[in-house]
Image 1 (cartoon, helix red, strand yellow):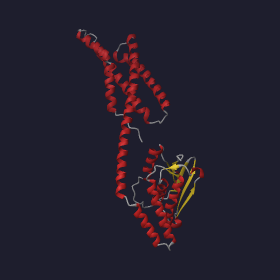
Image 2: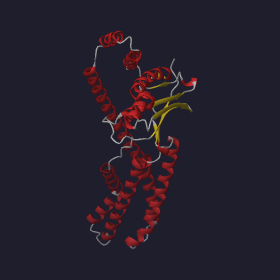
Image 3: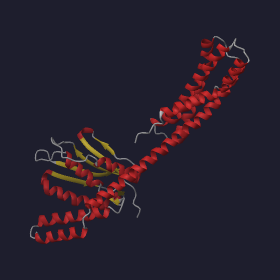
Image 4: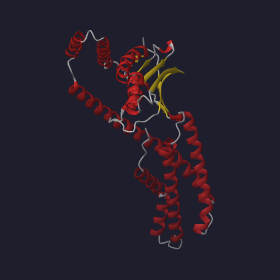
Length: 345
């Protein structure tokens, strides 16, 4: 998920406020000079105040932008490394701002900066840097917290919607199983049809049971996948084959239920399956993950679908395992990596 940026309007408002507060001593001094009637140096003092105000604003904006947005936008570094890099970059900006301020001061105002002002300048900018560093961090944390709250609300809404869809589509399991058993008795003499109905019954039972679990063992998922692919082979015959090579040590690992079925279904849905171009799906294990692979031979006319299968499966992985799917389309081969976790049993 892309990082939500702290709004520029908020950063600019804070930078303006900080610049005004940092310029306040000079503003008060200028006011006192005007009240005392000392107008001889008023023009230089006004230019000096405006010069400092502009520099304070630009410095404040740069530090806030760095610590609220830029430092978190591109690189996913460990916290300690990120903090160390941010501190070094903040110090570099401080040194550059001070050097630029001193270099341009006599050019803009026509006078050299006094030694007293020079020391006060260092003191002011260092204190500003410390304050702005923490303000930037607070802005980042507040934005992240708000983003997390919005995401949680969205997930709640999605969960409620899924529950509603489930209620709408709910069918009495006993009625369906009894109907399938009745159908089996009617077609008992047809072995292929009987086997088809048994596989369908097993699939439906597994789908109902998996709804109660967030994760299932690879062994259970493979049994379900075998029933599902039996139905696919019944339809496509020798035009569809599946090769499963999974090391025994991974059979007790766990994955989200119906993950393999979704990927096999995805391959069938999007690829041509014909006598000329049969489809072969490979499921194998490697380095603690399962891989589902198939050659890319896209249909000329794609079947209609929601196109959210992989997206939803990836969301389940992020929520349950804090991991993401890895998808590759190199060498005209579609490959999806499914990370595994050790079973809780």
